[in-house]
Length: 487
Image 1 (cartoon, one colour):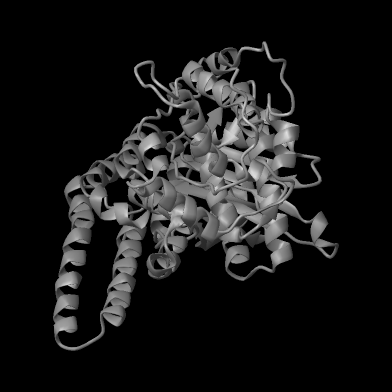
Image 2 (cartoon, helix red, strand yellow):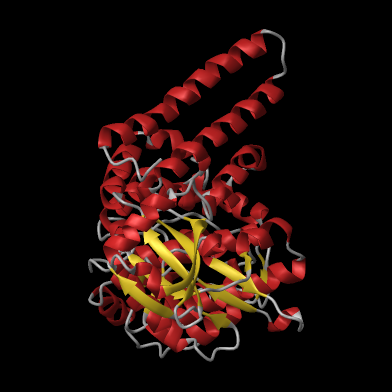
């Protein structure tokens, strides 16, 4: 494979092969069951074969197809275990690896973007990719001043591939629905199509990474590599070692999981407050646990890949904190008023305030206690609650609206919760909210939540071309209900 398969007809054919392959295996499986093999054994084999094909096709195509696979891998924590098992390994691979570009293609790209004498910029350059992701791959190198660096090179044809993939994926979205119960796949793909192309602009990525690197330069807990150089579709940053979060998920001790989870929550909420930017791609491949000889409580979190960020000059919108605080106080009427004001409930929709609070309390349980244990069991239970047509939560969710100004924030928050559940981390979620989320700790009763939301809407949260793609999932569980005010 010399580069990304660029022709739409070629990529469409490969993606179209997914449903054909699944249908063929289903027919074969039926034959095996008729032949006397147990349904459980045959089903497990079919699921594993489907997962293998999914990884092969999405990984080879890269572009939008692989980006979608990365999103799915974050939400595998919501899957029932009998379904998640065969898919987990295949989807998790998409977080950190893909078939690489040949060396000749990499060298040609570097010559075009850095000049024919590009080798003079490096003391060493490893042709073997250290990592491969959705639209580019990373190589280890040593910069001419002796610094160890990561050289990110964009795949040729990545832009065309993104659009072709997402158009085709929208046609076969029904295949992916069973992977994530409760997640509406088509709107997710539609949003990706509109926004994910900003990842192609490495200059924007360099700007976002510089801002974070400067802000967290002396931070004792969060580390962001500095930008060394950027030219067109090549980005050079300082190299960062560490244990990938995927390894912590697979083999980490509980103490390591808890530390990684706490730092992940801290970065989620502190980042927008300190930088005016929201890192909008929180899958495990973008984080490293930086260990040292000291106690685990002193280990740090390394953060990579700032290709998708949301611009929030005032930090996270205040209505989120105000509404969350009111919900935990049992103020059902106040919560419903806020939701209407911010556009979560359209004027034509009539809802019972207590029913809305019943819907929200399970989802916000991590904010109600000093220390919360995020688990796959917890996330699956809440995904099932909202996906079950017999559940009041299902019927209420269908009547709620997600305003564009909040789409990315919800996507990042909920997908981060997905990673926390993969980790099985115990984290002081509430503590971080109290410190970093405007309006959660205390807000004067007369303070209008709509003002902060309006500010968020005018700073590029929803409509700015610089805004990143969004994704959403359901999470929550039952908690003891607080007294409700009927004011």
